[in-house]
Picture 1 (cartoon, one colour):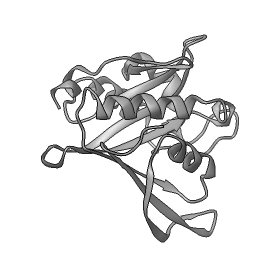
Picture 2: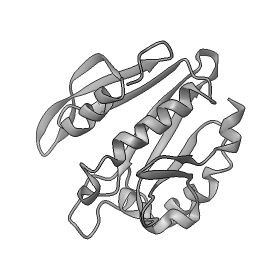
Picture 3: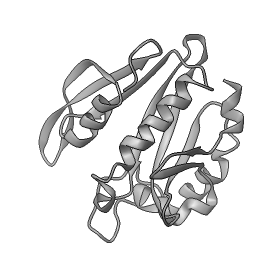
Picture 4: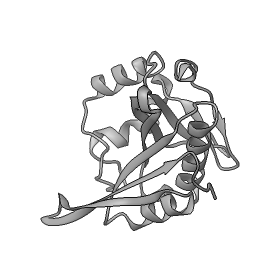
Length: 182
């Protein structure tokens, strides 16, 4: 788990995962501000500019998680973030989260490639035994990505989240080190 203290850049054909820092503020701000100019309104969290800047300034100092800015290779535009969190060293497990900045970046393979890069890092250099995530049932595109890279549905928390006045299920998914990694 020492590799979390020296988080690497992970490179793919479409995206590069860079350790998140203050230089990524402008690109990541829509994930925390509650929306962007396109009308996208599904923030990871609602934070102030100061809180977001402070979090990005601390991100590289943490040894219990990994925060990456997802940067498009062709033009160095920040298209999202990827996070490994909730480190359980005794059980060699962590939780994964990925979020793209807005719908203009959906359906282009960025989430799939990001998830593969993080998966391979988690089970390679990091040495995890288990990687888990949760995804809302209304996010069919994300569920398809996680299925594609090998995550297995472990359970469903029925009507666990409300969105626009409607209750939705939450899917718990995971990979363990011996699972196939398509």
